[in-house]
Length: 141
Image (cartoon, rainbow, N blue to C red):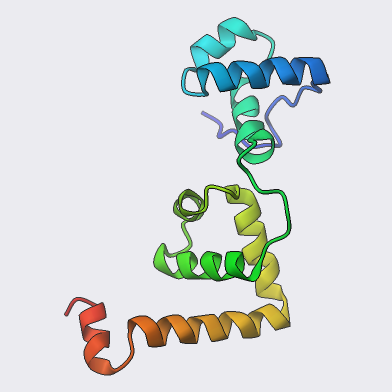
């Protein structure tokens, strides 16, 4: 089975009226049961609507600029979860997975942010690890 991506999903153009109907339905029923959704909106692709809601329409998502605190959290969770964007997004429910990943990639290319990341890494390393005795405790030896 071909993996669904944004490029190969049918991306319908939704009128504002249809979009508001879909959002009302999602707020009432949630996005767990795709069969119910299909019965209510037979012409719309459930995966596309779920993707749009999770990454664009969700009212809990923050659409503003990233703060220094957000950058710190992203970097800290990146180290903690070995770059698992799904786990990082679960820890930052106000941001979508894609925007977190994009911010991290953008930040990696910026020299100012690279220096800030190094400072954050040093801070985390010194806070959690400290001297060598704590380092071995940290590694569970």
